[in-house]
Amino acid sequence: MTDTMTVTPTANIVHDVVIVGSGPAGLTAAIYTARANLSPLMIEGEPSSTSDQPGGQLMLTTDVENFPGFPDGIMGPELMANMRDQAERFGATIVTDKATSIDFSQRPFTISTRDAVYRANSVIVSTGAQSLMLGLEAEQRLIGHGLSTCATCDGFFFRGHEIAVVGGGDSAIEEANFLTKFADKVTLIVRRDQLRASAIMKDRAVANPKIEFLWNTSVTAVNGTDKVESVDIVNNVTSETGVLDITGLFIAIGHKPNTDLFRGVLDMDDDTGYLITRPDSTYTNIPGIFACGDVKDSVYRQAITAAGSGCMAAIDAERWLEDIS
Figure 1 (cartoon, rainbow, N blue to C red):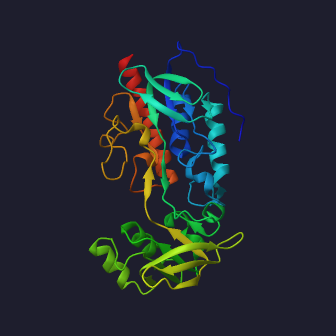
Figure 2 (cartoon, rainbow, N blue to C red):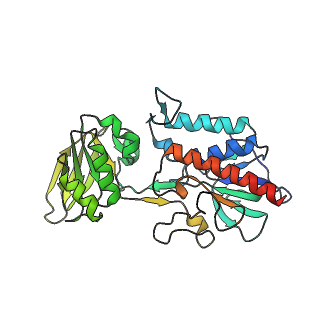
Figure 3 (cartoon, rainbow, N blue to C red):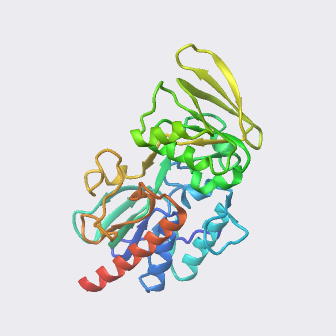
């Protein structure tokens, strides 16, 4: 990854575009707005932060085999470094800092970080979302090494394996059913005595011969030095403990969009926190503020769809700036 450009903002500088957050969505937006001669400034987040890590969730991913253009696959951090270099090549300025407050009440809009204040005629929000985890010691160490939060991303790697999915909602059932295309056996670990999923999803899971259920069960540890080898489990009713031998663990207990910074300012779903944009666009409820990637996508959550919406946000912002000029 290239060295971060040094920026010394002043009260007199108003950027055409400021991008808050990175990842495939933000970096694609940076590439497109830079090529449109809008000289975007990206606030990419902090490496120490779990909610807005520079490069997004792909920085925690090993092999990426479903991003077009890489027939042999590419490492997640390498893909993000390439996109970052490409954005800088076309003139994007990237600062490694964390946005701490915003003022979208009037234009120029204001974005404050720990170290500076930036003003912008338009803002693209691409702060992403984070997968909810179990809070176990080995999770960060084994993510991408048998532990995953995305079946459609990593299911192919578990052909012929015996694996487990943690969760009881629609997402967990969908992941489990999808994984039976590859794995010989999928154990669904449910902490209650019933599924929270919709009736149709429950019926599909029960009817799938490759899915086995562990009710009233929680995972207390993930075992393995450099790859998942087993998990420790406990029955929540009887307190009986045991070990489940598996080679893959998928955690499907939900996602949390990184939208706390925009609460009360940008329209978002009351239940999930995902930002709401106008149909077939990246426009938010505030003219000049656009949203793209996983911060607004509760359905697909793929690198390629995030990149596509980053392109949309860049084009929307460019056209909006032309209209107001």
